[in-house]
Image 1 (cartoon, rainbow, N blue to C red):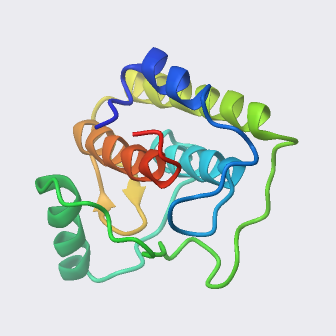
Image 2 (image 1 turned 180 degrees about the vertical axis):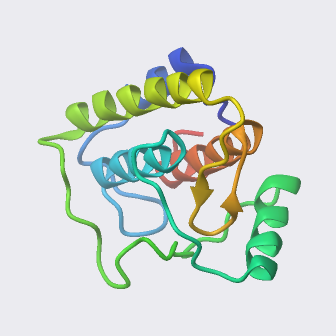
Image 3 (image 1 turned 30 degrees about the vertical axis):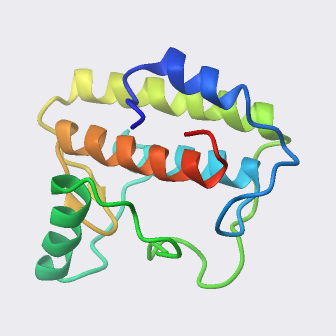
Length: 152
């Protein structure tokens, strides 16, 4: 499993990703996947505050599945912040720029929790998460998408 605190490993793995690679599952391109990861990190670093989409009971059920088990993420699950059809618009010029943006967002994640150690930014499917829970979520989320492109 990916450890988002081991940035050297993350970016070494991503250095093997090529823009023309096809996913093993799903419809994302490599650039879409990296931008998607950066987007989700923005939820946890104070830049892209989210709202609750689900009932507290549903949030807790998802939270238990994601944070308290090692079960694989469900292939095809779409978070409520994603477009219902198709892929989100790309924001970076290319894959290298997307990887650089991800690097910046992860650095901002570290700085956010240094300044706000008790913060609990909202995850759109699980509700409020503390630092430890966000790290666990990102570890699992990154691992899921790295598997999508055969990187793990």
